[in-house]
Length: 360
Image 1 (cartoon, rainbow, N blue to C red):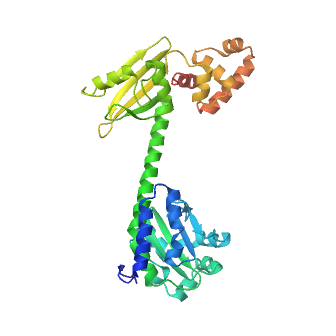
Image 2: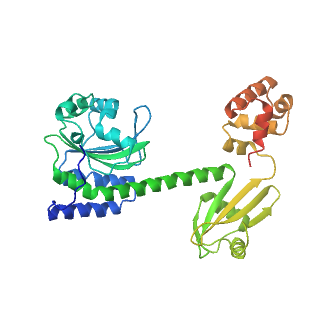
Image 3: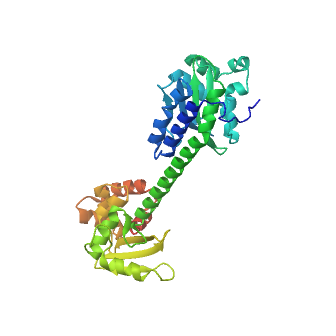
């Protein structure tokens, strides 16, 4: 039977102060390492020998690591015990329950099973190997597909109401810290994916604050701005021509574009709104002539010689013409073409030549 939620009224004043100090540390966590450092200090507060934190996800009864590192303190659990747990974790009445629906309570397997019922389960062998007698766990996050859980263990006796109440006091602070880190890592993943996508199409980004100064810029953007607009008047300032264009475009309807052309290069700058008065400058530079072998090597999974062959394929050259230009045999060209098709995942030389023209 499930217990009702408890309050911190039964805790001593010193314990409440200690819990509040941990809550303050949790509020300052800015990385998984920060959170891990706070968690590793919790066994002393709770009166536990071991602490574990990690994430389970649906799919083949497989344990998976989430935002938190999978940690155990003071040392890693016995490998055989972990293997037993990984095999039978679905028998655990708390963990299996939390994969079905979120649960706010601090729970123990003893809330669901008698000691005799517990000892009959396959998962009990993992606890027997380690001599664990007491366990409390708190769900940090869950959505039916995965559950992130913090668990504390004892080897000599079960946990009492004091320990359960301490975890309940800390529960909202632990969940908030976990959620912040999870959101931050998700934002990082999305930002990295966006940057990869922009890089794939030859674009780079500059973020301009409401004061007209550069708030952030990737290194490639710095290089492109210097090549097209010259030196900047200050470390945080846009080049003068670009700054004037941004200022003049603030009241424009739609997404203003600035286009520049040179003998072998083309530049397009797009100005887009961001938030809180910030603007994004998306700079896309491309070569107007056919790509060089070096550019093909940078953009495609080919070797130097394959890039030379591929560049000529892109020009529509025959194997005989390629052999003459590179000073190799027609048979060798044929071998290179076969390897190129395999590396690029295309079925014929026409498709390979088409890929050449996508490289800016």
